[in-house]
Image 1 (cartoon, rainbow, N blue to C red):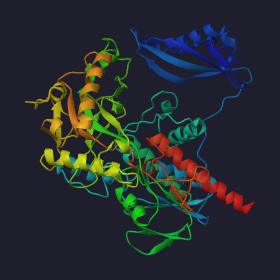
Image 2 (image 1 turned 90 degrees about the horizontal axis):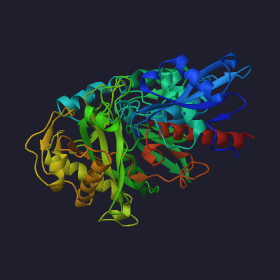
Image 3 (image 1 turned 45 degrees about the vertical axis):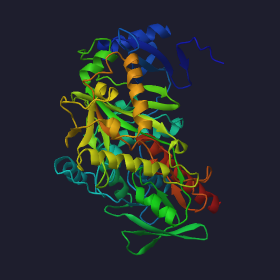
Image 4 (image 1 turned 45 degrees about the horizontal axis):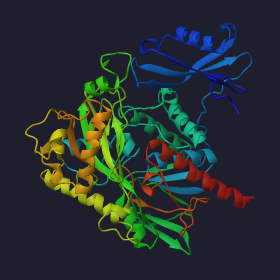
Length: 533
């Protein structure tokens, strides 16, 4: 076993060494190489090539440091290049249907092209550019298009809600493939280096458009404004689907990648007596601070350092038997209206690539198990969904039945006092002053109040009346699980139906959804290979 005290490791291809430098030194390549070689005790004459492989910020204490993993090639060692995406021509190949064009659906389609299968994508929403008009309508006219919004449309929810790429997935090979494909289609190569990679809402549409063009060029198909409305199952096998209540389309394999807000899909499966289950999720509020305050807290007062990016944070606390934690933290970001139907309000957050807005926002949510809910019964798959819907409707009612949201200053919320006024907010539809203690369920408000106090002790200055709570943050993940076999990844009751990504309960962000899309198509390819062998 390797001695853990060693600061570097050797592989047959390269040498890795960990170094730490001040923020202003991170762009000085000569200095970085000098420090790395000094640690390795090798002369620069032996260096054939080198690069920064990983980069992270160490802000645990002052001064803030930049941690770098340097990779060095010596002599005849060969550098592995970024893998290119190489599709096959599939116009006349075996077909699969992919329902949804979020990251799970798009990566399923790309993997299908790579494997020689023709993907036919059906997306209920619009293409990535056309979606912008509908997003503007939510903010300006407070009108929600139930088929085209922040959640539905090409690229899925992540396209216009930030584009954060980090994942806790342990499938590292798949993570590398997914990230490298993003670079292939136009993302900055720094996403392969940064510990918390981020593309930005302003840059994602172009990348997603390039992916769509690759799918079409290889012979795949993409159909927008195409909503799955029915499925046909015979003898435990998927046989056909209906789009927009039109004619039946025959498919033996359907990847169901509809996202966590496609509630009609859960109702459809339930009506067809196809098993679905209630699933744990998280729900709470979105909190907004001035970004400068978060920088000052996290960087120990060094909030004007031009060599440091806008600071983020990650908070978690166990409160009365439930976890309360930060979710989708957006430095330099904006709070967005993410409802998918009239009669509800939903918030989420996003950041542009430069993260240069003056606000910081993050979801602060409470983990909820189905059994925690008052109406829980073991055979009700909709108990969490119904709770989620009730909270969203209550907030809509409290804010005057519009896309404005009920809001409260943080200390006012803790002390159960209606806020008399507010600082400026990034939430464009607007906010309405209410006591959130009278709107949100007590099981949430009691824990959120205790968590905010605890977070203020962990981050001095975080718990302040200059912070504004926007409610609710409710679409953290699916409230329903669509079960699947652990080996075939097909639904245990319906062969050929592949529940996939966030909407099925198997992902929690862009990258994990993309990886799941790849995995589902890998399972289909394996099935074909076994049949043909």
